[in-house]
Image 1 (tube, one colour):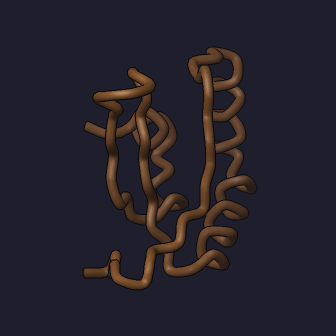
Image 2 (image 1 turned 60 degrees about the vertical axis):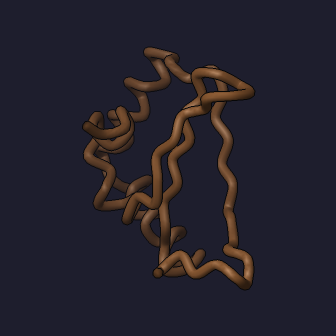
Length: 88
């Protein structure tokens, strides 16, 4: 099974490789967190630009906005600390 964002649009071609999908267990409940890994910030920007130019993405985004299922959405760019290698 996939996150509705991935399943609804097939955005994997743009979002890259998933690093993890999590749900909160303590704290703010019913929160889903998904992490995506990119080779660099430039890689992310190029992928996002390509996605924004895709008419299928534009149509999907309109459907999501009309359905209004999101209560809150946050985006963060994270950089690994020196002692962690996310590539293994």
